[in-house]
Amino acid sequence: MHSITASISVTSAREAADFYAAAFGGTLAEFIQTDAGCIHAQIKITAHTSIYLHDTPTTPTGSQIKLCVALHDPDETRKLFAALSEGGEIITALHKPDWAELYGQLRDRYGVIWSLDCGEGEDMP
Image (cartoon, rainbow, N blue to C red; front, side):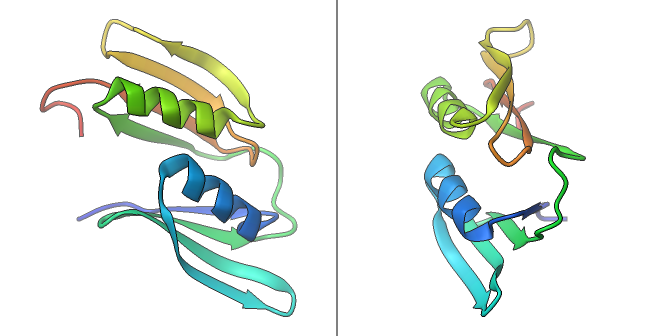
């Protein structure tokens, strides 16, 4: 297995694509639109990391999963945490736990729960 890609259903894929591209410093790699609106968007973050977004007007508020992001740079972690939490809710503020340099959890404006874990060493992905 090479990677697992997040596929997120939202009520406005175009708006969410702009939000996640800005938060992660990614680019809009693919955008498929019909007369009814956007039905698919792909945000390319790195050569091996993407986020897929799909318009689902009946998407319930909240998230069935939590997405975890492992990072190695505290400044990058703070920047991403701030970007994702804009318009959302901080569940656990960024802090220094026993197991990592920084850890925090938030629910973004689309109801997706993100867990950011910043550490060093080979045990971090």
